[in-house]
Length: 479
Image (tube, rainbow, N blue to C red; front, side):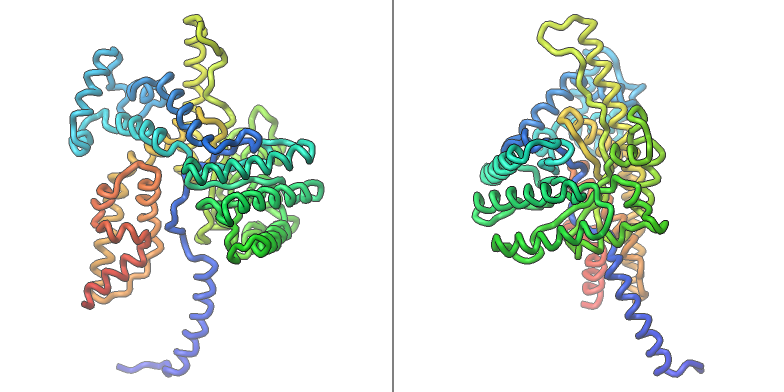
């Protein structure tokens, strides 16, 4: 066989391309297989206690069972699949529930009521087990501008409560604080609160941080704000005996300038790069962003088109970087207008209608985020938690069968390539498919057994990496 290209010339060109390819892969390593919480609850620092997340779960469960005492009621409010075929009489609902309870999971999947029944019961289990996945002790919008002495004292108390929660095991799996922004008028206050909080916390815990601890820096508009945070982290780590790189941060997308700068460029990648590897997530601030676009308060919702524009610009700018993206919050709280033990029938009915309307809005917003590839959002009140999980579980469970088929086909295709010695260069696509199941597993939507339907073993699933799965199968073939 004749070739025109000398080996030396070809090797030189490909080596040069290899350098550029590796640089690209470092910048865009692909989606992280790490667990991403489905939400972040923002709560005022002045209200935070060691058992806040536990109490929020109790409140959320009571809210769900008060306004949807069974899965049929919730399905009808949210118009879940096959809701129109569900019974209306209490006795018939009870009979259906008892019949579904007695079935195996495999048997239930053949029932029209399966989806609504499964979503409701998974919500109940989640609220009892782990109602809050991620919590931000908020010193910004949720706390407001208060006298310096009051914020100092709150920073100390909040740190002590976090330390107590660590000892008691009552914290959420992910936790952090949101400080005030590094704008010219607020930068000193933000730094002081961060210093007080971390210094107090580390003194209380013997130098230990909670698992998955992060600092949220809001209203970022220029890379220098991120760089300043990195330098502060270095000083705090050194002063408190933390290993370099321990402290991590998040940024917020809540100003038009972080979507488009003065030269008409999207600055998000430069802002993330300024964190020197410490920024792990970018959260969308619905109400600050819509306000910065000149949207009046009445129309500042997650459903406004300017939010989708910002989401897609953010996804395009940060796609493949491994930075977790989070949508914002629904500001309509599912809480009835009437309080007290002796409410009239009309007042009870008005409460129910108010809560159900708020449920539908939150469910719609969260579902819209999920469809657009935003797998995390904000919650501001424990009464919002049931709908966060309703949307999340409905999304994953209703997409499960199609996702199983796609990943199973993809795994088989990868296996054929491995067996025949072909080069299989779609590991990133495989990781994207695998991540669907990992996200569903992490939030409790599905079990490991249900992922095994894709043809993956439990050991392969636990690697959380499609590339490692391919490597493992290739080694088995060679052996």
